[in-house]
Amino acid sequence: MAKIFIDGDAGTTGLEIRERLAGRANVELVAIAPEKRKDVDAKRAVLAEADLAILCLPDAAAIETVALCDALGDKAPRLLDASTAHRVAPGWVYGFPELCAGQSEQIARARRVANVGCYANGAIALLRPLVDAGLIAPGQPLTINAVSGYSGGGKQMIEAYEAGTAPAFELYGLGFEHKHIPEIIAYSKLAARPLLIPSVGNFRQGMLVSVPLQLDALSGAPRAADFEAAYRRHYAGAAHVRVASPPAGGRLDALALNGTDDLEIYVFAREDFRQALLVARLDNLGKGASGSAVQNMDLMLGL
Image (cartoon, rainbow, N blue to C red; front, side):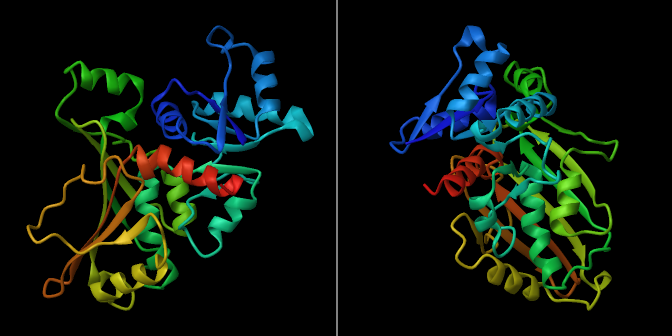
């Protein structure tokens, strides 16, 4: 059995990963005794014992754990980092298996994988196939709107919503900076910085990421059908990403994929208006976090 150490298993992502792995016969979870969680020697010992360490930590703490692994040399475990610390760092493979042809093979061979971010997962899933197909130019100005359940916002946000002191809905990141923007630019192969407007709703988990488009503002004036065809080519055979038909009622429930590791892509369009809306739906704790981590772990360990 592969020995897995979840560094930070008390947080939301770490707890979800632990629950997913608890009943599996092909992995063994190794851990630090609760009273020694801040003991560097204890952490060094469990890292040396593990085949793979999954880092569910704040960025600074993840960097410290990587430094401990560097000092272990040949005894260091392979690393899967769920923080944002290494997503565009040299020497790390990006943990979105459906990114492009050969990405899952790169993940399988990698010593160090940076797990994809939740908003980034939806945005890149929408944009990368269209950039690769030449339907969106890398320099095209883009807006990305997104709403997530509050479980993606960290301990303080979760406590506020569960205590009933948070608003029903709120925009945030209104300084036009968000930790997922660098990976969206890098892995969507964009040359222009997109405008990302995230928001959070009063529901625990679930996510919608959307990109509105004026079709005549795009080079080549593509049709919406071209987008759907590009998505179907790109994700043909993908286990967890699929192109879905727009619902008849004209509404999309952000919570519909909760409890799954799937991501659905929708193309809403009016050719008479020459307007389209691209939407990715996912569980921010599933394909957006813990589900992706387990998918990448399985690839890395050949499970």
